[in-house]
Length: 122
Image (cartoon, rainbow, N blue to C red; front, side, top):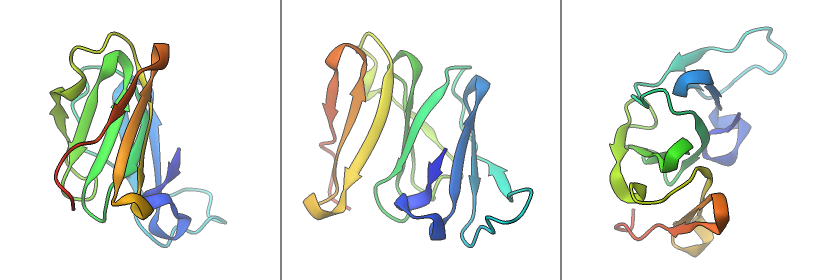
């Protein structure tokens, strides 16, 4: 579970067993008993999602078991598989982007794996 774009004001995200990813829109009422989560369209093949990070307002990355990576270009509504980590033996646990460093990002995995984002600048 985490915050959309790193801020509770932007919403919440949560992962569930079997690779499900739920996202709640902005203005989440923390005093409510239920949150307005919507299920993202992500086909993980059952691999769990361990972390999600927003690179900018629309580009979202998710990482998980067996080196799986997914990317969304519509603010986390629809995700596509990204084969960047196909040859990495192990899981990916964290993904982070740093706006103060030109939105460069990294994914951290098992056995000391550290992948750097080298895509186009947003």
